[in-house]
Image (cartoon, rainbow over the protein chains, first blue to last red):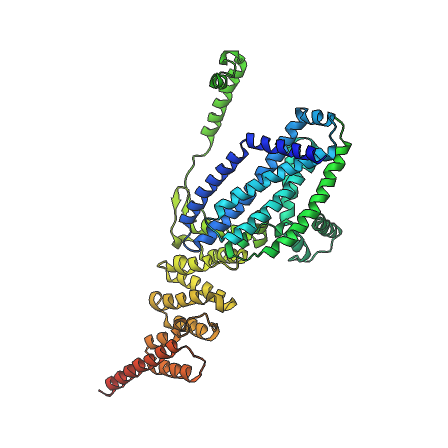
Amino acid sequence: MFSQVLTISRFTIIESLRNRLLLLSLLVIGISFSLVEFIGDLAITEHRVTQVAILAAFLRMSAVVMVTLFVVSSTVRELHDKTLEMILAMPVRRGSYYLGKLLGYFYIALLISIIFAALLFLYADPEQVLIWSASLFLELVLVVALSLVMLFTFNQVPSALTGVFIIYGASRIVTSIFLMAKYPIIAHTSIAQQFMDSFIELLTWLLPDLHHFTQTEWLAYNTADWAILLPLLGQTLVYLVFLSFIALFDFYRKNF
Amino acid sequence: MHYYHFLHKDRPVSDVPGSVKLFLLLTLFLQLLWHSFQEPIVAKAEDLAAPLSTRTYVLSSLGEPIAASKFLNLWLQAFDNQPGASISFHQLNYPRLTQWLDTSLELDPRGHYPMLVAARVYGSVKDPEKQRIMMDYIFYKFNENPQKYWRWLAHAVITAKHELKDFDLALKYANALAEQATDDNVPYWAKDMKIIVLEDMGEVEAAKILVGALIDSKEITDPYELKFLAQKIAVLEEKSFKKRQSVEK
């Protein structure tokens, strides 16, 4: 069974390399470098902090968008080309297929984290960059799993991408929204407002704590240490397993 | 063969139905017509709008307050250079400008960028009213966190003394520096600015008393600072002596 998983993941990696994903990553690096040097010329003080803050935010968002687009488009192509049906016609369990794809995409997420971190080494403390890129990898792991869930649920690229970006965005800002709802400037007691408050609180329970991941502050002010990764790793494992079972639940129910 | 395939993979243009080609040209013409009816694009200087709440910027940057703050700094700094129009800092609404600086500091409380532009960019315009607004803003922020913002108030003392020629204002800031910026990381030249202001105001005796009191307080242990103060006493005594002589004559 494990050899099947490894074969599927190997072919996922080969596909990504043939799709020139690495070339695209290098292109993003080139654009980011030009952008950050331009910003460096504009800043009149806190030159390095300004460059690092904007570069880190840009790279983080680019990594998430690239991984999501790749996972969704590559998997949907397999669905539409009937490659998936051909694989499942062989003695391969659906769980093995899912795990194989997941491992292949994790490898791609790792590559992107490393490539993007390489540029940051020019502008930030090396240890902080390593912590930041480890955290980016964990974040991308969740993005990969979320993309697969959305795709198995919706089957279509636009709906899957919309789903991923809404949930990802909500995971990053849900804590701020929760605090705004909990400590409003004007107190409110209406039933509709209470319902919304409860709904937002429910979201904080259901969504991963992405606002703790890959923080720009670490690079700008050297505030991170390796221990910071432990809770992030815990959250990643818990949510990855959760998302995987949602994906498998949908995948096992699917008729081809 | 490979490149030939790429170059000639499409069918010839003659295969496209005539109606499609016609509508393509018509719609292009329609777009050009539409554009010709629009008002001409004219460069006009825009007023600086009030900033949104800090939370809005946190949310719209997907929880990246530091990046949002740095981006706002650059945007605000470049506001005098709008597309096709250049406005001077004089034309900016200064009270509103301080709101933007405050928003940036709230997004990134560790940053010093807004304080620097307040002191050296917006505070350097040749308009005393606007300079005072910026100096007041620096003083207000200093009162929030004296140990962090002391260097910007020191800058404000110099601006008040040399550019605004308002010695009372300079003394007010220098007093605040002496009384509130008490951390070890604050250099003695900043804490002792009050002496220099008093000296420049002609209050030689008051400055002398202050220096003597500082030495007697035993709070100053730095040998360089003590040496500086001792030299200052000597200079002040000489000035005081000359002043007395001129009065007697």
